[in-house]
Length: 234
Ligand code: BJW
Image 1 (spheres, rainbow, N blue to C red):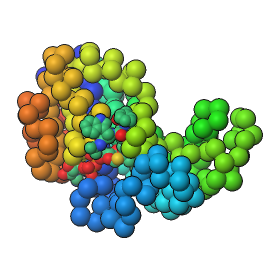
Image 2: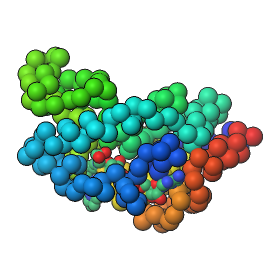
Image 3: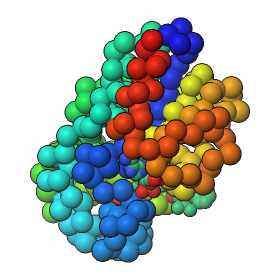
């Protein structure tokens, strides 16, 4: 198995961080259980009531700051360090657990909790502190323009140029812990398959885009992914 693949691309979702104690979005007690998606995760909500949205993400920060990677994140790092292929991670997660697991080639398509972006000049500010509508941009010094660098419904995804290139050239595409209901990420498997990749899904349950996966590995990713990496490394 060691020489089989040249470019391996992971797509990760909230399920990979579940065993680190972080809530997923659409399961029971999910992240939005006490909030309407329309109030906290759409660009319209942010434009209408930025403080409400800032507050929602500010409250989330301490938990995400403390969270630690689990065996699934670490298995990907182990693969990156030991398998003779380029291994990339396209993540929908705004947590930084892939970084904490010392992975590389991480592409955050839905943004990061520890960043804010200036809607005036585009400057990205790194911070685990609170961001409010009073926060001043460190680059252009304008206030009221720093938005959480999180991609809300209705906004374009980040780093899509790189992602398109990866999906065209991947020979193995692996989805871990995503329900496959949010586009365009939900369509990545179809693109990778079209361009010839083998496709594997790791999840606890069947998902909505079952059709495009060659193989489904059911169970907790913290158990199934390390075993799969062991097999690839043999
Ligand atoms: C485990 C596990 C364990 C648990 N082990 N597994 C085409 C068709 C229809 C609609 C659209 C379309 N194209 C675009 C749209 C609109 C929209 C969309 O997709 N809507 C659908 C919901 C219908 N998409 C967008 O607006 C996107 N932008 C866009 O397309 O721009 C172009 C455009 C602009 C304007 C008009 C038209 C086009 C942007 C999407 C941004 C998503 N942002 C969010 C919120 C961020 C804020 C926040 O963090 O609060 O990102 S949505 C939320 O869902 C978050 C996640 O990244 C994303 C995906 O969720 P994920 O990761 O899959 O989590 P869950 O909870 O759904 O699933 C967890 C899974 O893990 C489950 O399956 C479990 O079984 C599993 N699991 N434990 C293994 N231990």
